[in-house]
Image (cartoon, rainbow, N blue to C red; front, top):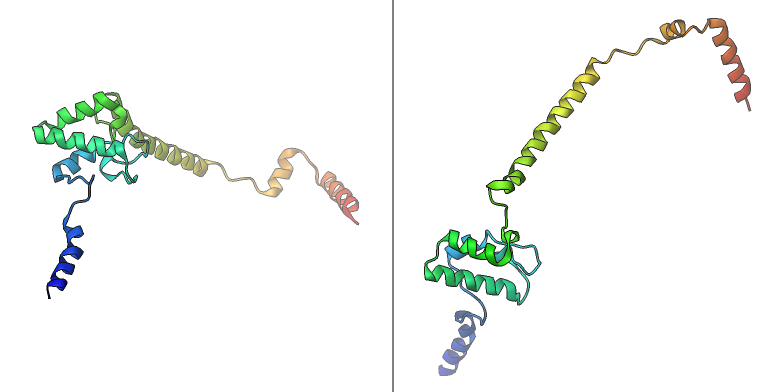
Amino acid sequence: MAAIAMLAMFATAPLLMTPVGAQQLSDRAKQIGGKFMCMCGCSQVLTECNHVGCSTSAAMLKELNQSLSRGDSENAITQMFVQEFGTKVYAEPPKSGFSLVAWILPSVYLFVGTGVVVLVIARWRKRPDPLPATSAVNTTGISSEMLERARARVSRETQD
């Protein structure tokens, strides 16, 4: 009986222990960390970097947790990361200043493109209908005699 209890204890102990190097992030840390990119070059959000043993994301998350435990505001943490890594640390561009262009241009492109398509379709619809074949012959100055000679010549030259 004691052997079974010891076996059960050893089997469940690893499940209860936190692995070394794993960090427990609060919901606030996950929320703030989701606004930054991991600077290891993986092009992933900081809290979702999936590189095994990524020291960059671990250091950034540790720094984030320390700042939150000191009581720093989100703006102070953001400024700290921007000073350390530059504006490329943002997961999405800020909605102010020149970066506002990145938010506005897709909508502008959509409206301009839609306008161009509407104008092209309107011009296509306003084009005059092509003239019937009989009136085209008369307006070009080709007589019916010349047309018959051309047809006869074509039929002679194309016979095998």
